Figure 1 (tube, rainbow, N blue to C red):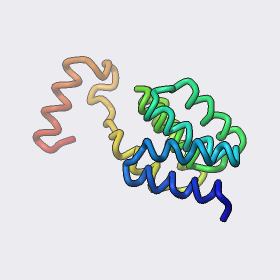
Figure 2 (cartoon, rainbow, N blue to C red):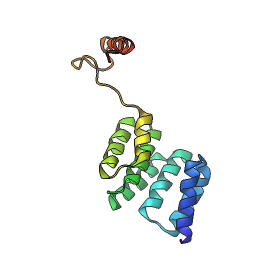
Figure 3 (spheres, rainbow, N blue to C red):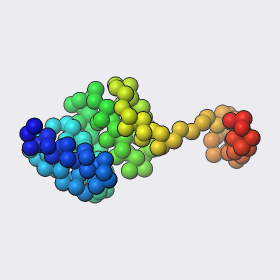
Figure 4 (spheres, one colour):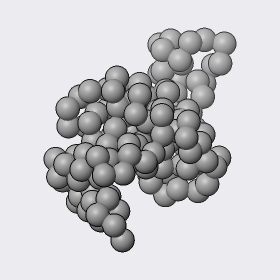
Length: 145
C-alpha cells in the first residue's frame, strides 16, 4: 500500500468517526500524491462540509463522476454536497442514480435520512394546498395513509 492509499484509508476512517477536519487534511495530501477520481470525490465532500466551498466541491465531484460514472461512491459524495448546499431534490436524484450502478449501504442511509414523501392526497391540487396538507395529517393519524 503506497502513501496515498494509506492517507485515503485514514480519511475514510476519519469521516466515519465524524472527524471532518482530519479527513480534509488526509484527502488533500492523498490528492496531492495521487490525483485520482476517488481522492477528488472525497476531497470535494470535505471541502463542502468544512469550508462551504460548494462550487469547487461540485466541480471536483462532477470531474470524478465523468471519469468513473459506474462508481456509486461518486454519486454519494456529490449527493452529500448537494444536501449540504440545500439542494435536496438534486441530491435525491443523484443518490438514486448511484443505486442503479451498484447497491451501496451509505447511499441507502442518505436516502432514508432525507425521508421519502408520500404523494399528495389530492393529486389535482398542489402539495402545499391546505386541503392536501390537512387531509394528509388526518388520514395519517387515523391510520388510513
